[in-house]
Length: 340
Image (cartoon, rainbow, N blue to C red; front, side, top):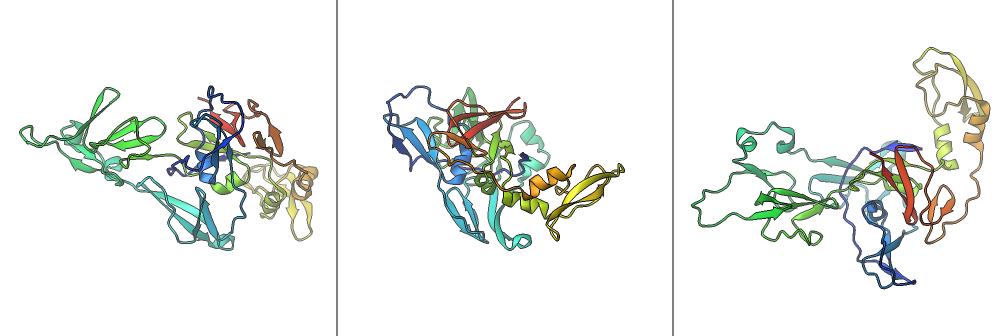
């Protein structure tokens, strides 16, 4: 089951709580951490190989009972109407109560729209006599023109990848980092630089808790969709509570829907397109989906990847759509990456 990605907000990952595990001190062929931002959203801790301080073997994720009236992100809980702590100054996220879901809490985010992005550039910006300068912790840039060459105080410049940046200009670096040019700029130490922030996506922790896997873009900074396991009985029951309706085509075919009043599947005339998720081609499909109990699933095994009730060894691949690949490289989740 695939869900499309809609929101983007940043996420920082910390190894402060990392733990070592027993095993041989083989520090070669360490899995890359490019596609692990969802683990930080869940509040998971990296587990290191013994003797390899920079080699992550797997992750341990907390198993906590989440309260419906709280939001959870990055291992922290937030009350309704509280701001969510994010490092990117251009994003504003808040924990809201959903009045349509018995005041269940959910995170909503908005991206600040800056004039330099959404307005036509001035002539002096186009001909590069002026530029937009960004201060650490500031979202939108301020128009700035270089000082006269006779000014005794020289302007700060930064060099990166053969290009020179003026003071305050933004520098895009690998691993999803953006830095402002300051006198402290050091491309070898961006994690501890207050002028740098990591821009990755907001991950819907409810979907992650339900066992869905984010399908990352090749850059690793964001994802395009979710690859989800078979829906649980609880989720299926919610689907089967939805009202059925005719749709907007004109085929007039016999389909089936689950009727909560009689607790059984009933036929109805369907247009052939549109309608709700509570629409099934056959009586058996409707009955199996809306009434079948959840299968007995084995518990996850540490050191293996777990998806849809099955444990997989390192190196295993999921059978997925041709548009993306999922490989077990950093348990407990598969690493899914979009093909280009």
